[in-house]
Amino acid sequence: MVTYDFTKVPVIKVVDDIIVQAAKMNASDIHFDPREDDLLIRMRIDGDLRDYTRIPKVYERNLITRVKLLSNMNITENRLPQDGAIKGVIGGLSLDMRVSTLPTNEGEKCVIRILDYSRSLAGIESLGFSKPNFEKLKKMIAVPNGIILITGATGSGKSTTVYSILQQLNKVETNIITVEDPIEMNLEGLNQVQVNSEIGLDFATVLRSILRQDPNIILIGEIRDSETAKIAVRASITGHLVLSTIHTNNSLSTIERLLDMNVERYLLSTALTGIISQRLAKMLCPHCREKVPTDAYQKKVFKLALGMDINEVYKAHEEGCKECTHGYRGRIAIQEVLVINDEIRDALNDEKLERDYLRKMVYTSDVITLLQDGLGKVLEGVTSFDEIYRIIDIDDDLDEMTEVTLTRKELHGSKKKIAPPQITIPSLDSFLVTTPYPGTLPNEKKKS
Image (cartoon, one colour):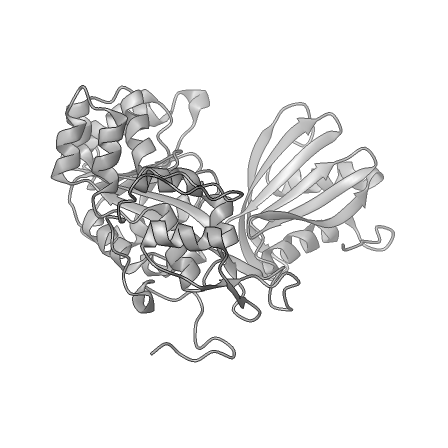
């Protein structure tokens, strides 16, 4: 925990220092949490909130007011939520941030989101795709029309993936128009529109106008309702490539959500090009990670999901080292990429389609599931089995693939004959497109 002496250091410098330190520690968010006796400041690093400092209650209002001034908010209004932005050089660092305030019973809570464009600007090769998934992604974005959906929970890296794809598609000969709320990253060569619901400028309204602007590629920040979904699908079958995000867990639930939004089946089967589902897992620190024997549950999961007998995996060093926090440093995306084939299109056109049949169509195609992709990255030593267990419902994923349910506490001998997985995981020596660890790892030999 850091302490500040407010008798010697002005509030302005304290706020600047908090922001700069958060940026240096690669924090994604800074939380100013009002408590009864003080203001607790926490930083989200690698997905976890960590205490940073406590500010005396007497300075709380001044601190929040300073943040609101920086983000062009109304400092006299503390009864309503507000949104703002900070963009400029602070402490020698060029930063772009989004700010949100919320009135609580103990005072105004403030959250600063620090936008990191380094992954997006580095290109799609840096996103942690396995080679088969990377080839599918390149195939999808090469299609001149159709809709590509990037799915996942809030904070799962959807925007990073979307912007990376736009970077790849951003050519002189293409007209790209985006509709976003908010615009998270300014890209040269794109026409970006900020939604403003207060004046009636919502997604649906902007989309209708966009179609008269001769676009080649359209980005819809998020499909939130039935009307937006229908317009997006219709735009994609009239010669446009449409990219968008939606909050679902995997490819199967994405298709079901679109059908629930009353998107016509014949349009969906024609328009849908592919779905990228993703979640973020913490990366093992390459300096202190350690190999351990697999337990019975882990062995069975690897056998069912990958058809492999695995005796050793890497795990995080509990105490960590000077290069990391508790054995982890940074995050990597776990992905499931589905390219819609003719079989799935025919199935979508069936009004009497059952979920089990659709599941069979999706997961007996060449899909590497989230679980399989995650386990592949565990075997690469990029992340740990515990992380995959934390972010993925392993029992449910295995049930989707093999119709066998496992529990970690108790292993039941199944009477069913377990069908081998339909997908072949590629050689682990070439699983990832690019390694997230540049150079040779410490105390380790290069792979032959």
